[in-house]
Image 1 (cartoon, one colour):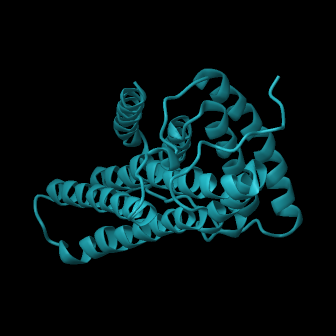
Image 2 (spheres, rainbow, N blue to C red; image 1 turned 90 degrees about the horizontal axis):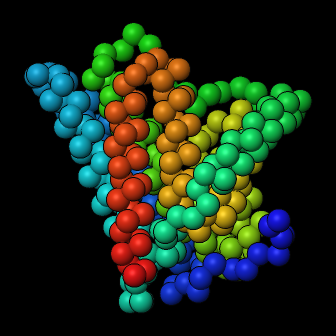
Image 3 (cartoon, one colour; image 1 turned 90 degrees about the vertical axis):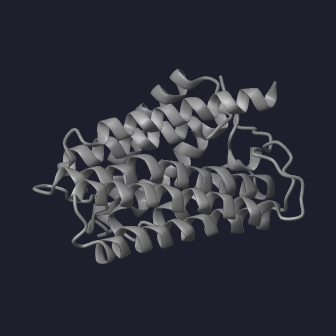
Length: 261
């Protein structure tokens, strides 16, 4: 039985404020990349043919821009300091299956309770779903890359990696879990998900604590986004992107095990 007394994460080589700023900066980089690449690209490449190449360019550019964002956040966190991947939440995974099953059960509970509370206080308006009904396969694939591959990695590193770890080391686990979850919910700018995503963010923080890594959370986050993208008009388009996400998680886990060896 897991106790409520939780030790702080491994010692961090940078101050908690610096790590928190790096996490929030990563989210700003992600917003900028989305606006510049997805919105700007649609303006700059309106007649680019063949259209599937245009979609491939946008998807690749978005991946590259966010990879640069991770590097930039890493530099903010560790400029002039001993560098480590630990504050990013990257570590070998443990207890994956049991943690994932418990997460799903708890997610159902908090979603039902959160939805009822959201309706009771009148926040049940707005949605985070991107409607891709009647859109081309090219468009659906670009959206799948954004929400199934990029978003889980960026958001888990930023919120359950840098921000959670920073606050955890300073204020304790549960305060960090709730605050990082609330911040994550807030960046979606949608009232209807504020309570539910705060609770879900705290659950993902718990998954990081229990598994020792953000990697399980990246997978769970990606699985939820895959389902959401599929039912909102994406069809089967998100599935191959989910396969790529899984490959990156496996590669990251192997890399962290090599680093620990």
